[in-house]
Each structure stands twice: as C-alpha cells, then as structure tokens.
Image 1: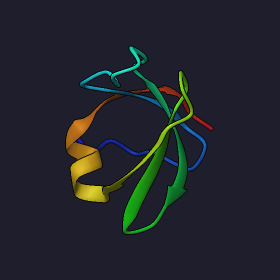
Image 2: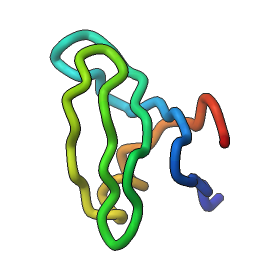
Image 3: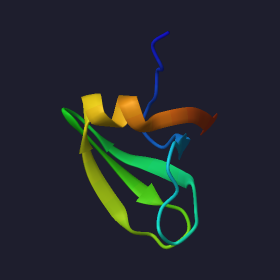
Image 4: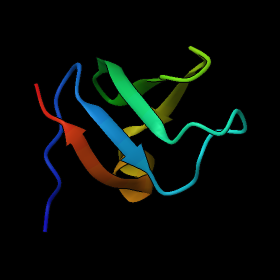
Length: 62
C-alpha cells in the first residue's frame, strides 16, 4: 500500500523526536522531504524514500 502525503500534512513517524513529540508537519516536498517537529520546531530534511519508510501514518491531511 502506497502512502500518499502532501504539503502541510501532519504525520506520525515510527520513532519520536528526542523532545518527546511524535507529530511532524511536512513543510517542503521535492526529491527530499523537510518535516518540522510540532513540539520544538526543529526541522529535518530526509530523502523521500527514507521518509516513506519511516512514516507511520498521516494524522491530518490537507
């Protein structure tokens, strides 16, 4: 099953961020996906393939 995600979606990753939050907002898409932690506002840039592998579920779809 292919997970479809879009810009400004709120997603849950398999592992939580060190700040304790597990919800992330997609703020940039392309070959890489930039996500921002909703707990501490730290952003992380991941290759799309790695992001798809680490994605658990989409919480809020835009």
